[in-house]
Length: 77
Length: 162
Image (cartoon, rainbow over all chains, first blue to last red; front, side):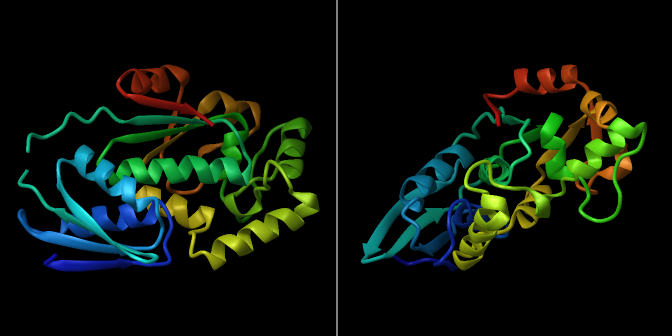
């Protein structure tokens, strides 16, 4: 999946990937896609939960061994 | 997407042990990252979590002074609620956390402050333990009573007692 920015959270545990995602998204424009790479499995449920609560769009995830890539699109407002 | 109503999270931090404080800040930081207003109300032993780490804290009669000598507090001095083993278990846990890139409690407190988590201290507990406003870390700026907390809790959707 094509992303405008990538955030490397490999080696970080909950809630750090979510904290960093939240901070990164604040500096992004509506419509832009953020790719987050992580290896803490918590992100598989955390990112959809984060997106649902913050009103951003969870686009999906790709798993490759230990590495998990999740994609979120920043919504307007 | 329609903006979602954000009612927030309130957490009573009653305990002064490292593991419990870590759990409280972990949840607070996650919630704050979800753009939820978060208030942490520190009371009783929970005040140990937010006492300043350096210098003398507390004043008053000998009982209050003793309370702050035997129960000095400060984020770096907290012990695990289980498996402290004379400090060895706590030291091992801190080493494990560092090895996993997990922020220390002090770092989590700073992060919480940066994320806008509101940290408030209970004035009754402060009086009981001979603590004044300058005995706390600068992240704690409000000193309130239980009614303030109940008011915040009524406006929140999630309320935890740790």
